[in-house]
Structures are given as C-alpha cells and as structure tokens.
Image (tube, rainbow, N blue to C red; front, side, top):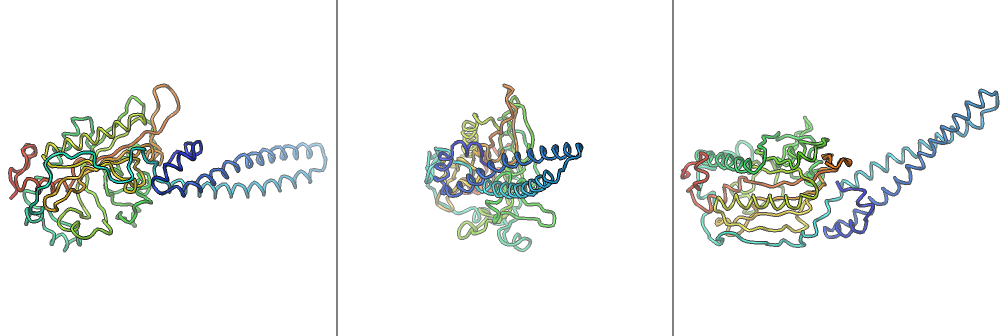
Length: 405
C-alpha cells in the first residue's frame, strides 16, 4: 500500500514513477476519490455540529413553552442530509481503499526498463546432461504424478540427505549473520496474502483451501511478513532478521516446455527464505547485504552465476527493486533464475501495519521490509548439473554424502 499523504503531496512525482511501470492511469481515480473524501469530511462534520446546535435550541424552546416545530423540521432535514453524506463517504472510502490497493509500489529510480546484467561470477558456458539424466531414480516423477498429478515428485535416497544438508548449512550460515531461524506455517489467511501483495496480484498462482478460508503459501515471505502485523517495535530492536525453512506451493500456471522437465518448475518445493524489518533509511543497504549473502552462498557451492537488476515489468506489485541471481545450468545451456532478493520499502508494512517507535520520541513510522532466497530446490539442480554426482565438501560436513548414488 502506498502512502496516501505522499501521493497527495507530490502527485506528479507519483505519476512519473508509476508511468515507468505503465500504471500511471491508475493514479487519477485515487486522487479524485481522495479529493472527494476530503471534501465530504468537513461538510459532514459541520452538519453534525448544526444538528447538535439545533437540538440544543429545541430544548430551550420547549422549556420556555415556545413553538419548536420549525427547529424540529430543520433537525430532521439536517439528519436526512447527514445520512446521505455518511453513505456517500462510506462508498467513497471503500472505492478509495480499493483503488489505492490496486496501485503497485513506486519503483526505485535505479530499477531499469530492461533486465540489466551487473556482473558474472565463475566460469559459465559448460554443457552436459541435465539433472534428471544425472539423478535417475533419485527423482521419481511417475510416482509423484500418480499420487498428486503432474509436476509433483518424490526425492529419494541420498538426494534427501543432500537437501537436508543444504538446508541445515544455509540456516547455520544465516544464523551466524544475525538471522533468527524460523519454521513458519505454510497455510495463511487472506489478509496475510494481501498484506504481502500476492493478492490481488498473483491469485492465479496460489492454491486455496476454501473450506477453511486459507491459502497455501508460495513462499515463506508471506508468514514472515505477517509475524509482526499490527505491532510497534522499538527502534533499538531493529533490524529484525529471520531465516525460514518451509515447503512452498505454486500453481505455475502457464509454464510449459523445458521448464516442466524434472524438478525445475514444480508445484511443491522447499526453500530457505531471508526476511528483514529495517528502518527506512537502512533498506537500500540491507538490500545490498541480502544480495551479498546470496552471492556468498553460491560462491561457497562453486556455482557459476550472474547478478541481474530486474526490469520494471517483472518486479511484481510489492517490490521497488529486485535482484535475481541466475545460475549457469549446463543441462539447459543457459543462465536461469536461482534466487532473488527484493526491497519492498514500506509497501507491505503499510498493508500489515508494521511500525517502529523512533528513539527521538516522534510518532511511530512504518518499517521497510525486504526478502531474499537463500537456497531452494533449484539449488540442487545447479549443484548436480555443475558438479555431477560429487557433493561439495561444505555440504558433506552437514550430513550430505560424498557422492549421490
């Protein structure tokens, strides 16, 4: 949710920012509805004040034995007008809330019009068999399809210990960098999805459990962001950093071709996600910090990758700026997205009302929130296609076998 006061104070600045995303036309209804709401409020307040004064006058007239019929008629007329204005105000406020909720976050000035490759790390360009050819029976897609439908899989044998080692290693690495490990719920209410901007933006990708009015989360960003909904933290407690492990669920509507082979784009996968609540003035630096952590993890696994500053069209509703780390996958012969990290500024915090109390004693302010992927099922794909069945030493120390078999 955007700051309505910021839009009101600088409508042309907001219009220019939204125009970069192709959404400038959504701003006019917000400004018009806000203007009408602000006009209605004092008119309604004056009517109520008049009614109170007239009611007082009626009492005075009746106590003195004078005719109060004219004053009573005036109160009735004022009351009818008050009801009309009150109904209009409720309708305007509802439409304003909906129009404001439809606006995406204002993009950071450094978010590009087209994807921008910032750097490449490691030796890319190798070709070879893909992960499904290498892993063989360790990935059972046929059994997954029989039980749950297409694009579900069973991971078996030594591959299970590789994933568990990858998760344990990532959580310990993040713990050493100030992130509190979390096992969050994987079901969430609608307000949690709305609060993070996944509703109404990506409903076609989300699984719903209608009997319980719950949704399966597509990322633990959703329960992490909602952990402090409605709370006010002390400035001294910031930043708050969490690292969550969870299963994630996505419909992946529209995906086709090579993406549906193996476990690259499945409906259920495991992931370790980073999430941070920070002061507004710290969010740009925190974004770079998350990116640095993601890079350090890929470097420790010796996976070639490149860093991409993501284009405006692919930011999603909540992100002001986003980086993708794309790993070189020899089985596909190209770079593919492995992890990402986003700065959502105060967009999610306003929807979820997550604030902090500044040390200078001024009123509470909304925090900024950021998220970033540490490791996911695609990390396994990159590991196997890069190193074959041999497992990096860093993961062997956390229970992975030396070689997958």
